[in-house]
Amino acid sequence: MPREFVAKRVAELKPSGIRKFFDIVATMDDVISLGIGEPDFTTPEPILEAGIEALRQGETHYTSNAGIYELREAIADLLEEKYQVRYDPASEVVVTVGVSEALYLALTAVINPGEEIIIPTPCFVSYQAEVLLAGGVPIEVPGTMENGFQPEPELIEAAITPRTKAIFIGFPNNPTGAVATRENLLAISRIAEKHDLLVISDEIYDNLVYGVEHVCFASLPGMKERTITLSGFSKSYAMTGWRVGFAAAPAGILQGLVRIHQYTVMSAPSVSQLAALAAIQVGADSAEEMRQKYDRRRKLIVSRLNEIGLDTVMPQGAFYAFPKIASSGLDDETFAQRLLEEEKVAVVPGSAFGSGGAGFVRCSYATKYEQIEQALDRIEKFMERHKK
Image 1 (tube, one colour):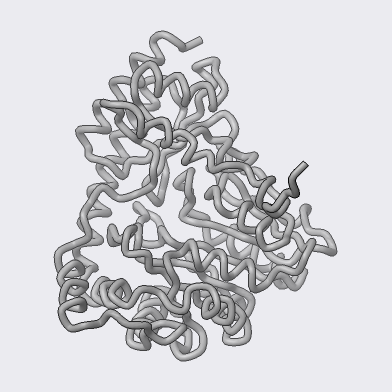
Image 2 (tube, rainbow, N blue to C red; image 1 turned 60 degrees about the vertical axis):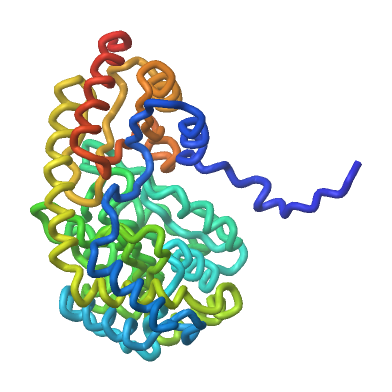
């Protein structure tokens, strides 16, 4: 028998529950996708022009490992302006290839083999996988619809063991759209301090909130020194293909991220970094215009899903609705599969997002209003046949 060359931890990873369905979608016609979490907008014109001008000026070379200093300075200034937390751009900010690389760097830099990372779920599909790839053990703490999918501090504390290294939170949340309250985050901060834990906070959707406040975890009293903040430009500025994000952390921690970053990718793309700088400098109005359009879609999709009989909590952030599909009599995998086959609407099974997501599906409203209307009409027809 031939030797097994693929590492065991890689071979044992489950395929992404998101990509599985979209491999099928790619083979079908007339599908309306409510699945991929990608803005349907083109990158705003001023940001595009900055990228084009960068190419014309020959900005096509490596940058500093940590990123163009002017961009790091702009990121630090933005975090201070919005959240009153100050980072030194020279030693506490690194520009990454999307927030996905920032996630990889953070977990690889801090996890020793066998250490545990507590993760409230439902959560983005990469969190548990990246913990495993870094040699750690993901410990899921499921949330509930009844609690609005808020992180539950008492359950988080109950999951702590002598092997716990960090708590990983992602709010505004993908897939539920929940925005963690200041009260809950303060409770988590007290737990982190009591048990001497690191907190890794994915805040990629921080600009996409609706009528509520997003609290930057590092801005809470005493938390900057034990927090790695992850964010980027993909969602707020419709820049997914530019692949530019960042991590911010105390210098002693960030040094570990930069060390891995320099051996892994050298530096984020130079043109993308200059486009990201333009996003901070001149992109606020465009980002707000997109946020308002998401808000209109949010109200449409939630009201219609509830009318159809799929109980849905109103999301307060990001661009996802997370309906409970119990009234269909189907589990979430079967629901998504049959909806795609019978009505050509693509959603993602909630179980792809961890143990807290079983019995739900994720519907992205990062697509045109008219397409959402059509998709909802198709879902209604589907439910007329399957409703218990």
